[in-house]
Image (cartoon, rainbow, N blue to C red):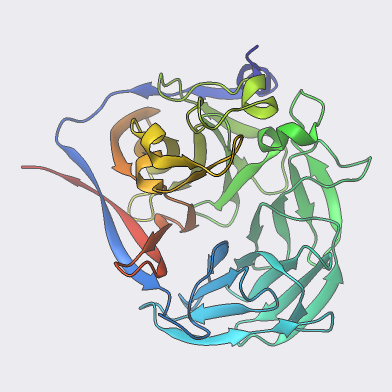
Length: 358
């Protein structure tokens, strides 16, 4: 049974736009490498599972599971600079850094195991430490100290709402944007949104992870403009995807990585999606009688990048690339996990560029 989540969400919105496709024949999309993060060994080396943010000084802030009480700082060129924090429960200490975001004035760090948030200044001094029920999947930290979160908050007054507003004092002042379905933990992905800041300080973008649907919202308002894209390569989620998906028989489910405005021309937006590679069956191997593992992510996933004209509501260019692009770490800037020839993990930082062929 298909879950008609997208249509139900759209009917609750007064301002809904259906995107059409008018591909420009000579338009191009390229990925330009900005930096490569990860040393061969030592504190600048990477382990699996990373959280990446960019601060106001263009430094890359990276937390990974191999060093749960701290995060690493890399310069704009990718060179490792230092670590921040240590394991513990005191100010400036973390049990596990779950998510981070930065504003022009500071850095917001969420520790999900300790249920705390920490505000740092740009020199990494602790400004405030607060208790937090939220474990944000995505967060926008604003210059005034407030924030918007995408999070599943396990309280009776908030569970099922997809977005949450945090005051400059760290208090959750409202929860909003509830999908029409009752919350179920086994379908958590339907409630997760990916947030990106808009081209001005008053707006932000909300991407629906399991639908090709996204919204442009204004801070302080619950009314958003909804954009919907019907694409035959991005199918609606089904109950099977969440209840009994078989990795040997079912391709990886498509997902929307994120949406942001093009920093070079804010008349356009970028959308990045993950879909299955046609070779996905050859990219897995059995671990035991019932479990499989991915042995080649580039043969298991593909990423699709699309450029959208916000004036005409048309998809004007689209390209497909090998592998999985992870997230927007800044407007028009993405991250991608890779390995060097020796198998040492790296994190590539890539900038999207639009162009034309002659």
